[in-house]
Amino acid sequence: MGLVTIGQALLAADRELASTYRDAKLILREEANTGRTSFDIFLSHSKIDEKYVLGAKRILEEKGFTIYVDWINDQQLDRSNVNKNTADYLRTRMKQCKLLFYLHTENASVSKWCPWELGFFNGHSGSAERTFIFPLVFTGEKFTGQEYLELYPIVDIDNVGKESSFRKDVWGYFPSTEREWRQISSILDRI
Image (tube, rainbow, N blue to C red):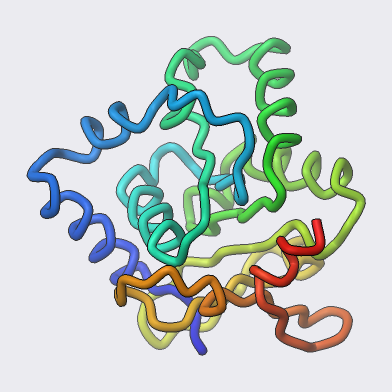
């Protein structure tokens, strides 16, 4: 098992782009407003990491999960005018998701929204096994994040880049409590 690398996320984004001969923004726009009201995973991220987000989303979808990304699924949200209504809307969307994956990058670590989403989802779900850190790392690098991120299990994915709908390839590692591995699919089955 291993953490997903930045290179793997970029390759996944490139697979998506190459398979459709479109750019990232066009692909993301086309996926917007599907009318879906429930998802397996809310992908918390920094908007600056657009291509990483596209890659992470593709990797998870290749494993058979449904993914919510705010600016993909709800393009009507105005990031230049964030207010109480925006927060209320995101709360509603988080409640429609079974799990939250916090896509950890350098940009996410300085985001104001990512920690808010992480905290809200963790508090709302009432379960430590529904909120995960999904770190993107450089090849050979270990994940080290801010101290508070150590409270959450870490996402680990086997066979990245191999198209399959093997939900069994996606794991959560719980280092702070049991120091054990659990399949994300079995966690979803219990929700």
